[in-house]
Amino acid sequence: MNDNHLIHVVDDDASLRRALAFLLESAGWRVAAHDSAEAFLAAWQTPAPPGCLLLDIRMPLMSGLELQRELKARDIHLPVIFLTGHADVSMAVQAMKHGAADFIEKPFKDQVLLDAVAQAVRQDLASRGESEARQALATRLDKLSPRELEVARLVAEGLPNKVIGQRLDISERTVQVHRLHLMDKLDIHSAAELARLMLQAGDAH
Image (cartoon, rainbow, N blue to C red; front, side, top):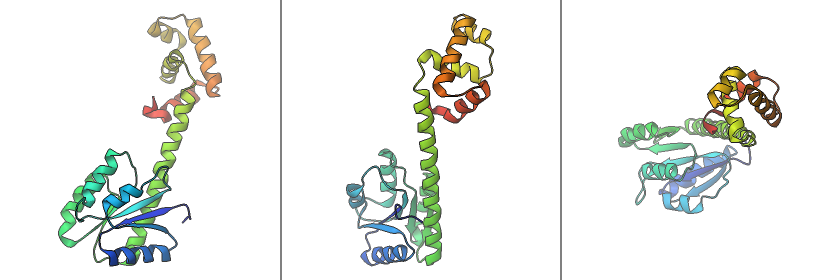
């Protein structure tokens, strides 16, 4: 648990909202409570600290499901835990299919909710770590010229210089020069290292 983490609670029921905030704060979490989906969106700021969103599935005006869709449209990647009534379970299953982290049926045990929040925050931290790693790799690859990037991809596939030259319609010597330059720019020393880096980069390029 970390003071930098922030748990958002969105519920139009004031008494439940207060109870959730009290429970979470008692467990050491920092909490931001909102009485509507619209209020949450109005208060949202980036960059946002790691955390998760506790969200009532049924609310007037914008429902929890509608907020989930809006978060996706705005490219806000915050794990969502839906709070549901018994009649809402089928809706919650649909929410899970659209990427919700969990759903908890009311009334719930305190520890069940706290465990779900801890898991959702771990999920957010892992996702952020992966995203930052991908961005760091993309930044490294941005140092390469378009031609060097082409050569890097083919080297990563295990192709020899001669074949790469034929593929790109350049001389074997030119391929060797590009290889030396791109290895220097990426601070790597072997084709195996390059292959690992390109694999980790995935769809960054």
